[in-house]
Every structure is written in C-alpha cells, then in structure tokens.
Amino acid sequence: MQFGKEGTRGTAVDADTIMLGRTPAVNSDTAPVYPREDVGINAPAVRSVKGGLLYMNTLSSEHGYFQQLPVLFGCGLKGGVTPSETTASQSDYAWNFSPSLTAANSPDSLTIELGDDTQAFEAEYCMFERIRISGEVAQGMEPSPVNVEADFFGRQLTPTSFTSAISLPTAEPINAKLARFYLDTSWSGVGGTEKANILRSFDIEIVTGVKPVFSGSAYRYFNTHSEGLIEVTASFVFEGNSDADAIFDAHQANTFQVVRLKVSGAQIGSGVSHSLTLDIGGTWQSVSPLSSEDRNNNLHAATLYGFYDPTGAKMLQANVVTNVSEY
Image (cartoon, rainbow, N blue to C red; front, side, top):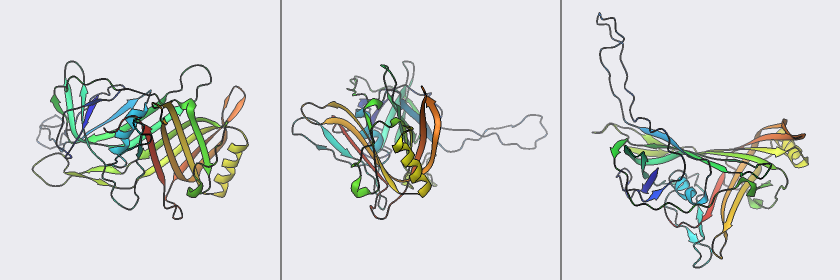
C-alpha cells in the first residue's frame, strides 16, 4: 500500500510514500441489489441495480512505527498541521494533532494505491474514520509490538498502475515495553503523576467523526465530507496493585481523571526521541478487578470513556515526535 497527499480533495495524485504493513483484501466499491419483482418467473430476480460508489477498507501494521502516525492523524483527526523542529538541524519534528471540539479540523485527504504484481488499484479522497493503537507488554525477551489500525473511506476504486520508484520508508518501531502510564485529576496537571509498575496492555480507539456526504450530482460517488462527533475510549490491563485498586475506587465514585499514555522510541540524531503522547480526559466506564491472571498475578481490566471537560476545555490531545516533516 502506498499513498500521496492530495492538494485538492478528490483529485487523484501519484503516490510518494509506502505504508509498511499487510495489504488488505481489496474489496469492492459497489454493492448491486437484486429487486424481487413479480413477473411470473421462478427466479429470485430478473435484473440487478447498482447504487452509489464508496470504497472502504482498513490498513493495519502489526508492528507499527512512529513515521506512519502523522498521516493517520492528519487525514483523520486534524489537517493542515505544520510540524516544528524541536532541535535545530536534527529533524526531530513535533506534530500537534489535538483536535478542536468547537471548530472545523479540516482533515487532509489521500490517494491510496494498493494491489499486487498483477493489478493495482487506487482510491481518491481517502480519509480515516477510526484509528486504533494497541499493544501488550511481553513477559519475556520476545517483542512487544504496537498494532496500528485505521479504517478509511474513499470515493471509488479504479484499476491503475502503481507509482514506481518509491523508496522504502525509515521505520522506528513503537514498542509497548516503552509505554508509560500517567494519571491525574485535571487537565492542568496532565502528565504529572506516573503510575509505575502497573501497565500491562493498552487499546486506544479514536473515532474521528469524519464521514462521506452524498448529494444529488452528476456522479455516483460522494460529493464532500463532514465532521461530526469525535469519540475516544482507552482500555487497559493493569497489574492488580494499590494503584489499580484506586482506579476501581475512582470508577465507583465517578471521578473525572486525565490519562496520559506516552510511548518513546530511539533518539533522533542528537535531538529528542521519537514519541507518541495521547492525553484523554473522562471517567472510568468499567473496571474489573481480577479480570484475569498471569503467573499467579491478578490483573485488572479498565476502560476510560473520554468526554469534554468544561474546566480544562479539552477531551483529547495527540502529539507525535518523529523524523518526518510531511506526508
């Protein structure tokens, strides 16, 4: 799978970047229906009818990497973001994709190419409607990869040829073992209190609210997109210790809390390190002490449901530092 950022949404462009991961089943962009009509023939239908065009699929990187994150957030959560170099001449670019909850976020769009050595296809006006980032800390020497998954939609699927001569990307893997968990009671204190020796796994799901909009026109594909509710949930598995017990107490008391999940990678040149930082404010929707067991250790499962906090005027912050300055 490879992609190019569109200058005008819906105007296809050549790809310039390869996305590492598994190529999904291509799927179709149309679903004909077969109307049941009474014509005196013992057959279920005598014709098929095609409706609109809409391409939908999911990209997945089982071993996610930092360099792929800007395009996912930029074409789903917040577009038009210009990164800033943290350390002069070190290419350690900081991207802030924290979405507005009161104004348009204007996500960017892509032309995506996918297929195999027999046939390539392209879909234009692609945007991400769901982003899921999950990882589990391995309990031995094996890797602890972070899975990055994103659902996208596009206007239509067209047979084409792959854009050639695209170099493989540099990829700094996201390692769940390097994930750190912070828990505070307000946005003003977010990231101030790390809860060490507790995080076993995490599963963050962001529904971006971006959706295709169809209206009458000369074409069967969607005309434009709109932005709706942004939703975020964060599920965790914790060691069953006193901090996990305190989270259960916060759930019972319906106490507002702000979670920070930060995953770091290698240093970029002599600058700062690759990182993904997600901040989510809300209350614990469910907490299940003793939800599972690992080698005689009790584990707790918990899910935080994100919502807008009028005091902090926030629900979600998403920040990435990596060595790419564009997508």
